[in-house]
Image (cartoon, rainbow, N blue to C red; front, side, top):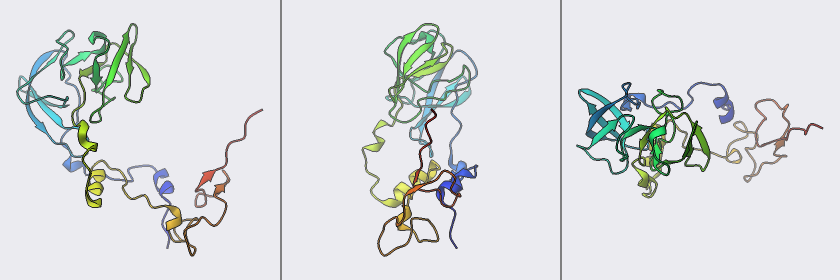
Amino acid sequence: MGKRLITQRRGRGGSQYRSPSHRHVSEVRYPRFEGGVGKVVDLVHAPGRTSPLALVDFDGDKVYTIAAEGMKVGQTVQISEAVQVRPGNIMYLANIPDGTPVYNIEGIPGDGGKYIRTAGTSGTVVSRSEKVSVMMPSGELKQFDPRCRGTVGVVAGGGRTEKPLGKSGKKYHTLRSRSKAYFKVSGVAMNPVDHPHGGGSHQHVGRPSTVSRNAPPGRKVGRLSPKKRSK
């Protein structure tokens, strides 16, 4: 008995690749309060994330933040409207000078940070007026509300891709913690019961790889026919 195609399985909705949430350290959000000075208590490894986390103590209120490159235990972290521009400090985008690297930017003021959270990445503040323009790691210019907060610096853990994983099992567990599929088997390598491209004495599609947009779900694999141009 064949299985569902991977695309069909994803299309059902819901979590198809389950992440081991019991291993996750904590949710990473900016503190609710507007100002304060904290001290980095510990730097911890977070399964499911590419970057390490910093445990910051704000007068008894301990929160996890994404660690900046060069951050160390005992360092102070400031949250305020006007603070020193130093890696790890959290500031409003309106107060960050042009050309400063920034990460973990809020999409809406107060949402805790949504953009630029991957290890080794950072954006650059380009200009400030009614909206703050930030050059994203992809090269896109994105506009943000000046009241959105961001962290000065570059996300720690940037050299993670330089060290080879070494074996297949290490890659499997690494991607499993991030709830991503590791094995990507091609259709021609499957049996005919599992995929329309499967079977044969050697690996080949065996039929036209272009399919109609009206094809049934079990047949809709390969290259979908292009949409007609409206005249």
